[in-house]
Image (cartoon, rainbow, N blue to C red; front, side, top):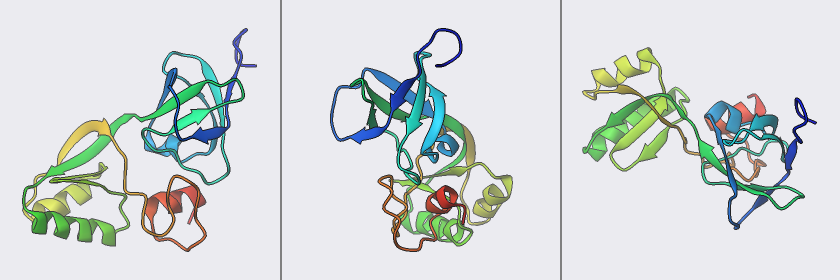
Length: 167
């Protein structure tokens, strides 16, 4: 039971499709936890009970024994954002940030990472202009198994994977 007379809803499975009747907005740190108590965006209390090591990604659908389907949303967080139309310069930025094991959200002409003034200064040295913004943060899951499905048999140097497993 949750506080008061509220019933704690259970979300214990991923589903591939369904009509979401609620949403759960979480920052990256909370999306890396496979078991937790949280509040749906409408204020209802939920318990998330997924297999250990499963990270949540924006757009994932979760369901529970009662049939409720919930969509996961990435919360706006303080991130540094770099916009650049030069793919070579953007690749250089990714290389230098990756060398520091920084989790990166990489999109066309856009990079995002958790705000860090030292990293911002490094990118300024490359000729880029990082801007501190509030935006949803969905870093790359990594090529070595740091995916949202919990497939982590191979050793990883992926920051999201490492945060999940405490490397």
